[in-house]
Length: 209
Image (cartoon, rainbow, N blue to C red; front, side, top):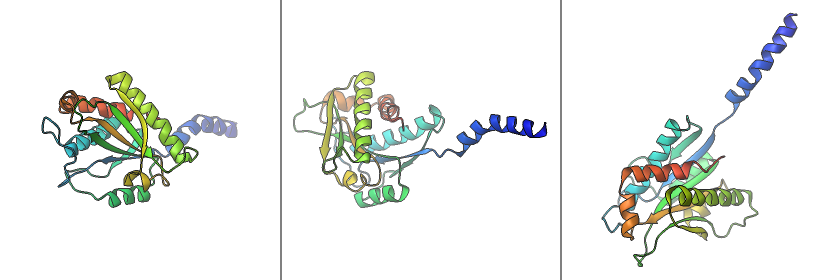
């Protein structure tokens, strides 16, 4: 009878033990530029380095307030500091996150250029498991940004960016360009805090690791 009670108790406790024993997925959010590297300057004089940092911090906050700390999230920088690209990718190799996201804003000579695009590493085939997952998340993120915020999707593209090149063998890695600072409408949109929070949420929600 005692053994039966113990067995029944274990059946009730097992789901709780499994949940407690599960490790959280780890995200590494890279706020582009910083310090003396301002990145692009908007037509309204906002700086890319400030926009990327506030969005990265908003992702951190939303994970706590809306998702109940679903992920363990780390940032490559928490302040207006210049961090070399090498140190950013070294951090990824040390942490071995489940996803690396580098956040940037776009700029173009054509002030009519608009939209959001997500980059994968150019020379890594889609058959690579990390690249395959990167592509899935990139498409989901573009879909979220287009449907929820009305952004024009410029699609998933490829490039040989150092932060992608040096992280893709460690984990899925994407670089997202969240609008054009050279465009009046998008620069003004990015200049408003609540809009940056909306962008952070649109980056966070479609990840689903």
